[in-house]
Amino acid sequence: MIDLNEIILFDGICNFCQGSVKFIIKYDKTKRLKFASLQSEIGQKLRTTYHIPEDTDSIVFIKNKKAYVKSSAALRIATYLSFPLNWLYIFIIIPTFIRNFFYDIIAKNRYKWFGKQDACMLPTPEIRSRFLD
Image (tube, rainbow, N blue to C red; front, side):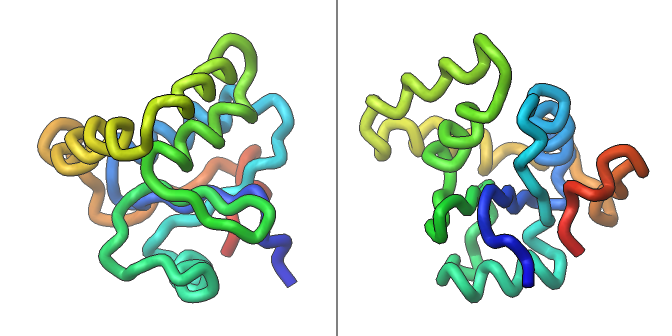
């Protein structure tokens, strides 16, 4: 059974999303965060388990049996990062609809601005254990 805690689901073909995952791995000093692409089999199973709509193309963070999306996911992930990045969580005080307005602008344009891949990223052997199959 997979530990369904501290999992980040991301768009595996999005260059911006892949870059974000690499950034998170670099600054996650706890090494507790695990990753799976939304397109993967486990990503699809987790979508079903947590009732995440099929058309969701946001980052998803699963913690304590709850799924967070968009800016709420990003800010909760920030708490795992080293100082001063973990202070980004302070932006949680901004109402969700305002945070997600800006999040959605980036999300809507991410392929145009950053491009996309034909396939999901392949993790290096050093970080392979942090990715779910």
